Amino acid sequence: MTSASSAQAYDGDPRNEDVLVYVNGDFVHRDKASVSVFDAGFVLGDGIWEGVRLVNGKLLSIDLHMDRLFEGAKAISMDIGMTREEVVQAIMDTCDKNGFTDNTHIRLMITRGRKTTPNQDPRFMASSATVVIVAELKKPRASFAETGLSLFTATYRCSTPDVFDLRLNSHSRLNLIQALIQAIAAGADEALMLDQRGMVASCNSTNFFIIRKGELWTSPGLYSFNGITRQHVFDLWGQEIGAAHMRDFTLAQTYSADEVFVTGTLGGITPVTKIDGHVIGDGKPGPLTKRAAQTYWDWVRDSCA
Image (tube, rainbow, N blue to C red):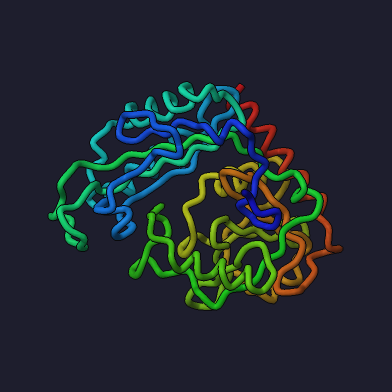
């Protein structure tokens, strides 16, 4: 089941019910795929992940995803136990095993492995890294392009890099889940999150952009995800549409923006039409957001032609 009102909602496919999941080199039906209760990912959220898209038989921006994956593994002193090429091949093997060639969203999850006992110490390991790959047929929910999302500003803040660096795609995401729970309780689709200074940072699962007088603004990224789609959209805007800035801005500037959208691997560009009860623009997805989305998906098709 997928929620009709969620930034992470999607249009699925019945074939997803029988996907084979990659678990440490084996392919297992999704209903039987499992890891140990002693796995570091289950015990502590000790691991990293990537969301990757397969388009026309090609993995979109796979080099950038592998850069981020291996940088994250190095930052937490985790040995993946596979080369970049072996990880990419495992992803493609998973797609091939399921007969998927397009409109496929892949979740690659790697944890430190199985522990001898449930504790934090990474020296208490009983196995090498656990590698899981889930490939599913997922299209961005088309209705959001017409209606837009509703956001709610959570009281939970994006963490500073010295506390928890969001540029690490870590399995530990409890503060982001707490922010989303607040947004859901307020009747919104996703949580908008501020940094420790009260500046707008990002959403709980997507990167955040506003448009003011034809200019694109997004946060400098010190307190938000290192979004690959975010960077592509920012670059494409500058090349094809107009001025783009990474800068600090406030909620007041957000409420009075002409247009707002969020970005992510699954949805690409998704318009936002309401924040904290404030209607953005005329309450409909704006023309520049639509142009940006068209530019982005054209680039995706060209990249994977």
